[in-house]
Image (cartoon, rainbow, N blue to C red; front, top):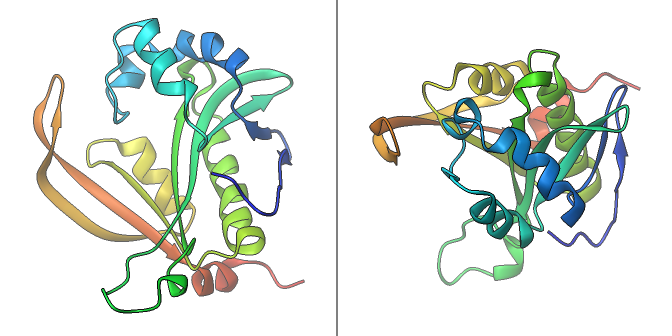
Length: 190
């Protein structure tokens, strides 16, 4: 994710959201290695080396800090929207962002993922200027589903057994989205 407009770091009431750095990799492994975390992420990482390889090239990964402590990480990927072949590619360039969060269980239940995701919705719509933000989860990941709904994202689909999970086999997924106009409708008047 290389933004023409560099909003980093983003500060919320309790968090600093900043690009993930190589020095964050070891600290994040302390929670990324836990089965209760890996169960809900898109990659089942079984070793520190797998995590290092996965995290090293992620330009879309942001660190979440509270009082100088890494409490989680969040994906913020700005990407092209889909366009019918033959249309102007510029019309869909950088029109969509994807969010995905991972919170250290030691810091879960405090609203950090919601706070960070809400701030990044603002960055996506108000700074980057995308027209749509999406988020996906395994359907059984109730905490992530609650976050998407709390943010005001709209459930767009439920898939049946579309994802092969390391321990659960074929499982269902869900997708949520929000459009820029929906974000503006939710934003308090200034």
